[in-house]
Structure formats: structure tokens, C-alpha cells
Length: 199
Image (cartoon, rainbow, N blue to C red; front, side, top):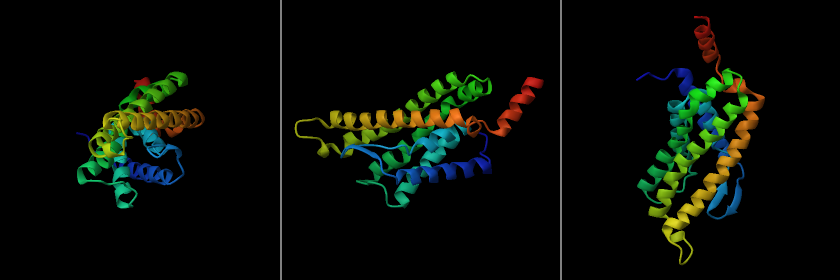
């Protein structure tokens, strides 16, 4: 397995720190259980810039930072592991679309690249909130309104949050990448592409 460079690890740490800073900003509160935030956007930008592995690590670091800074809502150790280690790391699944997004941007197909960006954000959001849904069923069923099953309650709460966050992050990502695509395409990638085209 290829080892990550020091630069990649520094970027993972930086984007994780940026995510936790954004997490402290006011979010859009729709209900006590539904809160929409743009805090995932740094992890998504890193996913499109570096791919799955680095963004997976950045998401994991973000979850660990939340616990370390006392910003985590912990009911049990297992719940904390699921929601702050597994769920946050799974945001990195957006990085599975790294190659196609990079290739479309380099080819000048900005609209196609942005369409893949939106799809990648939805995939990363779904991967994260699947685990929040599981944790909601297992550990927070008592918060469900009287007569509502914990499964339905967790699905509605986490599904609404996931949908809102993915839409907000998609809008921001499209704006960022449209105005500054070089934030995504690294110089080393451009050099590699130029070398391939010349050979």
C-alpha cells in the first residue's frame, strides 16, 4: 500500500481543523433533531483534491477533534465510536470519485465535473449519515415522539439532515470549484498529466 506523503497528512490535518472551525458556526436549525451545517465542505474539497484515503483520514481526525474538544454528544463508548470515528471517516467516500472529477476538470469539462462533484457529495453524505441513522435507532430511540418507531424517527431526522447538508455543501462546492478549480487540481497532478500527454 502506498504510504501517504507528509504534505498529504498536513493537508488532512488542516482540512479537519477547518471543518471543526466551521462546525462552531451557527447551523440551520429545523428542529431539535435536525440541524444543517456546511462543516463537511472542507473534507469534500480534500476528497476531490486528494482522493479517498486522505479524506477518510481527515474525516476521522475531525471526529476525534470533536471528542477531544468536548463538542461530541456521547451516550456510550460504542455510540461514540460509531458516530465520531466511523461516520465522520465515511465522509471520505466522496473521494472515490476523485479520478473522474480530476479528469473532467483537466479536460475542461467543468459542467460534467460539477455533476460528479454533486454526486460525490451525496455519496459521502449518505455514507456518513447511514451510521448516524444506525446510532439513532440503537441509542436515541427514547427521543422519538410518542407512537413513532425509533427506526422512522432516526430515518426522518438523519435523512433530513443528510439531504439538507448535501444540498448546502453541493451549492458551496460548485461555487468554490467554479471560481477556483486550481484548488482541486494540484500542480503535481497537472505535471503528471502533461508528461502523459507528451509521451
